[in-house]
Image (tube, rainbow, N blue to C red; front, side, top):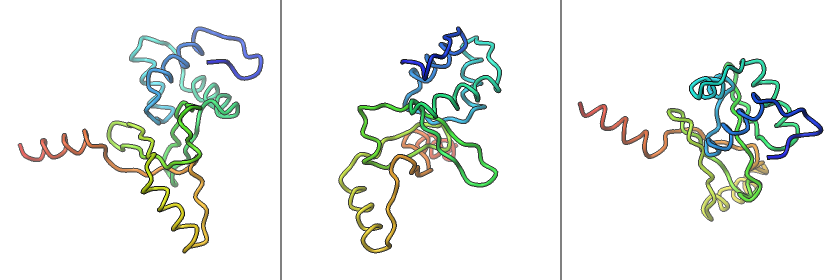
Length: 145
């Protein structure tokens, strides 16, 4: 991944970039990214993660999803080949899994919203929250105990 502008490449920044790549299917908060880095043995502070993530958002390499009041924003590596402008996204509230909802049905929903409600959905910034299949199964299995 190329760095925005002429940024000096430090070990901490490289660790963050490696972590983003390894978790490209996840959209996580700054606290969650920092915890992942710490779990990998990195000693990088939350402020540094936030500062660097902000630069990556400005450069277009990372997408920031702003949440509702009182909720933290989440950040995810942009994958240029995924065509995120043309589909919606799902985020699991339990594990943080990020799903590209690239299907014809959702295109129809977007067209319906535009035609019948006069509202154009910005797919690059649209995120639906819920539980992924794996977490739903875990929840069901845990409830059966």
